[in-house]
Amino acid sequence: MILSRTLLKRHSVLPGFDLALGFALTYLCLVVLLPLSAVFLKTFTLTWAAFWDTVTAPRVMASYRLTFGASFAAALINAVFGLLVAWVLVRYEFPFKRVVDALVDLPFALPTAVAGIALTALYAANGWIGQWLPFKVAFTPVGVFVALTFIGLPFVVRTVQPVLEDLQKELEEAAATLGATRLQTFRLVIFPALMPALLTGFALAFARALGEYGSVIFIAGNMPMVSEITPLLIITKLEQYDYAGATAIAVVMLVIAFTLLLAINLIQAWARQRQGK
Image (tube, rainbow, N blue to C red; front, side, top):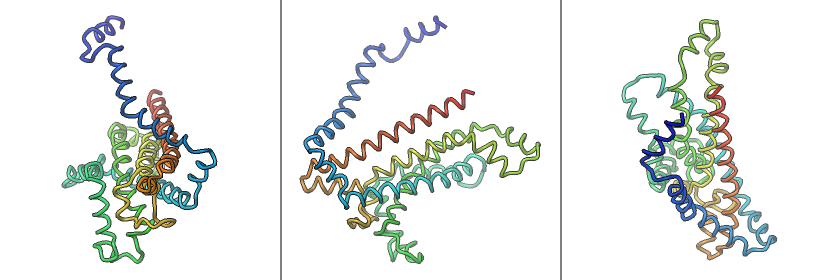
């Protein structure tokens, strides 16, 4: 064991620990810590009363409700249908399977502005899909939900898919042999194994939706108190040269994002612990 560690250290393709750690910390400071510090320092120029008034203004609170509500609903829908898509891709063979698998990653590769324009064209009142719907989608909060669902699906599929591929089919066969129904097999055998990955995919999709901007502004309509998301409100304040107000709202979003990242890390640690048992 000691010999293997010595060989790995001696023949490592990366620089030594001290040098690698220095590069990592420098990169982290330049790319992450300095911009975040600037946001917090600018916010500290406000008094507590001014900060509280800014982040709890009626227009800002309405944007919070829309952003967090639509993000949560989109992540929840993606958790259900992302699991279904991953299941089909892993367990079934069908024509053009590779094409469908590649289409899952389309929200990753597609520029967000292009996605927003395409969704608006599809769901507008005279669009290919919108003209057949009994309710209005584009330029309403429903359009925000549609856009956030579109960009969040790959996170769930790509998180659940590897776990499904590693899941042993013998466990399902053993459950069927013991008389379990399909529902019982899924609920008692498959779902517990998928739960950590599914929760991680849900958290990633939720966190991604919170910061989405490009694909939402085209389809949302951006009406204050109705369909205005928090990232757009931050941009609006920046255009009005209200930098302290913009950073104050950004700090609230950052704190929530950090909380989500902590939750994701805890879920991943829980998943590793379960897999180690």
